[in-house]
Each structure stands twice: as C-alpha cells, then as structure tokens.
Image (cartoon, rainbow, N blue to C red; front, side, top):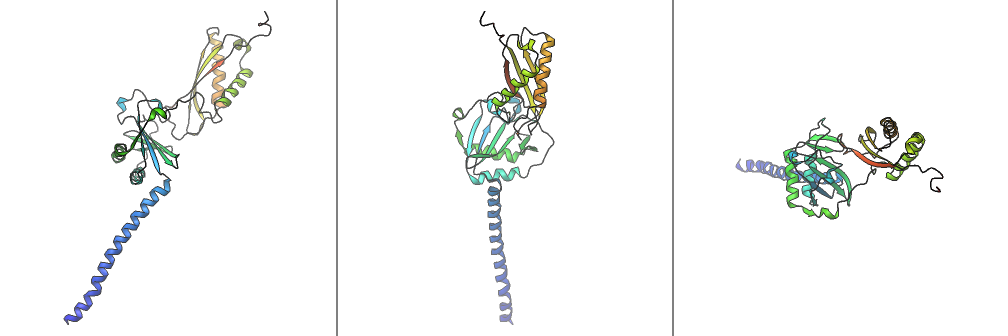
Length: 276
C-alpha cells in the first residue's frame, strides 16, 4: 500500500516542478518580448535631452517647443542605454490625455534612430506634448528623465547652437516667401506708397499644427506715410499672410508660438532721377 502511494505521488511532484519551470520560462519570454517590442515599435536607438528647468517660475516668459533653443542656458545630454530608453518609452505609454494645448516648456527630448530624429517630445512638470497631443506628466516620468541626465553624457551645446532665420518656417523656403510677397505688393500697393522712402515691415503670425495661418499682426514703419496709407498697407499684407501663406506643419507648435519676419519695401527710383 505504501509503495502504491509513493508511486502515485511521484508524477504529481514532477508535474508541479515542471509547471513551475514552465512559468519561469514563460515569464522570461514575456519580458524579452516586451523589451523587444518597446524598441522595435518606436525605432529608437538613442536620444537627446535638453533641460532648462522643471520650475516654471524660473522662466522669464512662455517657452515653447519652437523657441526653446533660444532660452539659454539649457543643458543637453545624450542617452544610448537601451534599458533606460525603454523605461522612458513605457512611462510615456501610460499617460492620460488632457485638453490643455498650451504650456511653458522646461524640457525637450529628441528620439533618434540611426542619427535621425524620429520623434520630439516637449514637457514641463505638469504636461507633456507627444505627437501633437497633450498628456499629464507624471512624477515617474520626470524621475526617469532626471536619472537619465545624471548618468548620460553631457553635450557641448555651444557647437550645436544654430540661430534660426526669419521666414524659414514657410513650407517652400524663405526665398520663395520673400519673392511672393514682393510680387504681391507690386500688384496691390498704391504707387504713392512705394514712391516714398523705404518702408520697414515687421510681421508676426500664428499658425496651427498643419501650417494654416490663424493670426497675423503687421507693423509698418515709414515717417513719410500717413496713418491711412499705413492702414492700407497693413491690410494688404494681412490678407497676403492669412490667405496665401502656408507654413511648414509642426506637431510641436503651440498657441503661444509666433512666426516672426522682417521685410523692407524699397523706394522706387523714378526714371531720370539719376541723370539729374
């Protein structure tokens, strides 16, 4: 009887041990699969972190994704450790969406694949902008970034800082923008305005993420022009930017972002003036 019981219990013990080992193997396979998916789905092999401050009170004014690089000093770090990159990506996948679309940016993260930026993320201690949508930022995500900066390689930003040029945001390039504006003004602006001294124009535009102009503010500077003449010129330039200009799409663009440019209408020299 005893021998029979022992023979009966042996298969049960073996099955328990076998089941336990299979669970361990299954867990390891699941972990490896999740880790692989994390990297493969986002195609990220490295990232750059540009950090200014988590504290909005230290910022002199609204800092957006667009003007962030002009708010020196910021510190830049390069991260290539795959496990920490995966941890950050996983943290980003757990965030909750919000309708908030405008906030002051304190940190900017560039995700790279083979030295090419595939995703840009902007955030502060409350919100984070990902693929054109805003989410609530979490303490875990901030801690993850802080940890990355502590262990990442610091980059010399003085060699990487490049100032932007007025009009670069136009989807066909600044030279085409100025050429179109010149042609438009030559057709629409009265001669009495172009015959006066040089007129300096400052344009400030706002655009949505798709590149459509949503707001335009025009300032005209010319002492020889009357108030009504300046008004006519402002209205014509306003129509040009609101109706004819499309900017480059930018999913990081915010409501507080301005696109600024300066332009000069040169005085027309009448024929025969040079010969006098």
